[in-house]
Length: 182
Image (cartoon, rainbow, N blue to C red):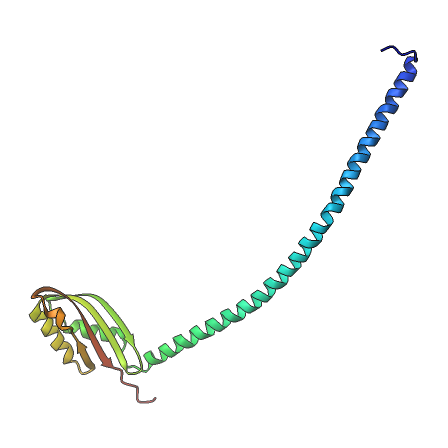
């Protein structure tokens, strides 16, 4: 295309055209940023209110949880304390009970497991073992019954059904003597 304008005017027109184009582009970008900021305001307000709400809820839950944990710990301490009070009432300790039972077993008895518990009346031991013969099992039961601390020995009759390699569970109960100063 031919233009009758001198080159100096053409250069001026190009500069004005580019400056107008950049001005419109700048205005469009500024408008987009302003609209974007306006669109984000509700999200920011809602997010901040949710954050404050969650922080308040967390602080309340922490206070509640800490008090419930404190209550649980106190309950557990009381439970353990009551269990320990039963243990301290006894002049007979757990190793003594186990050693008494082990000393009364004969060579034909192989003990696999001890389960020991105690209450206000005394202690209870459940012994899982294997006896070589029925006679060694009966001898072991009688030896346990001779112990003055033992009040009851339970051996199920079904455990005497086999004559060799008898797997059995025998339950022994004994008394806990209280110390004189209590």
